[in-house]
Image (cartoon, rainbow, N blue to C red; front, side, top):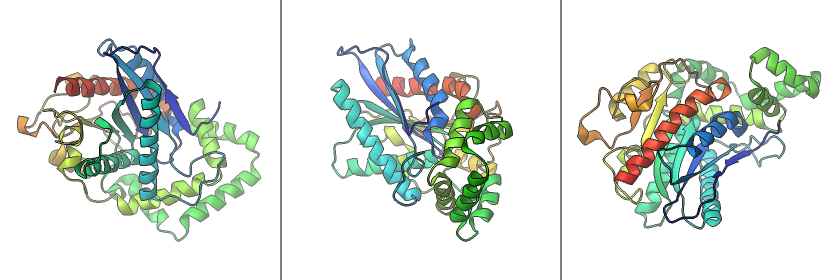
Length: 352
């Protein structure tokens, strides 16, 4: 199985009629930032969207790229902190928008997706997008965002964050972790490593091979620890204003204004990287819908806030015990859910 630094899934058909609209769904991974972990998730989501009867005139381009420093062959120039990763992903997004525009000869509408710290990066990209437009720049049409198991405030207060903070407080923790892995690699032949990873983790093939590549990569382990330290230090208070929380629906952020927010949050019920108190406070302060997520998003409309708050994000809590690292063994069920939210985002945008 090839471990790739980027995943691209293009339209199955090449229709060029005036009624065809292209959509770029741009996925931002968590930490460790290897996009190959998400191969089954993105391929399933692409297949579901491409066969959608709800949006017959839509063409979908799905794209995801590993974060900086997580390449399995090439060296990255230095370690990348959280701000560096935001800059890196922002550049990748514009490159991909231009690539789709050149290929189909029209501008795609963009939906962002982010998992874990990728959700934090997603919100920062929305903030930058808004700032460019307020500055008079002509930017791409951002119509929504989907945040999966987001770690966007006070990650260090979560059960796993408490442990990670203590370990990452050790001086030169990134270098120590990298040195330990190199000793491990010296003692264990590379040809055996995959089988050990699979035996000890019970990961399916795609995740076991990606983890093996991560361990063997030039600076992947060091980058993961370095980025994790930055996450603990920087992901604290809610730092975004209503222009970000309203995302694609506030004036100036895209070509249309709608009465519904096109930001969707999907929280784990018992996510060890998100403190339940922090999550519940954020939902109460920022969310529009406050129901559990369900077997289908369409049924999750109970406990709705005032219609005047319709610009706020829709927030759902999973009730099926899907873990934070859903891309390991739960790609299909999450892809089914995300397909519904993508369709809702587009329908809301088109009806505005």
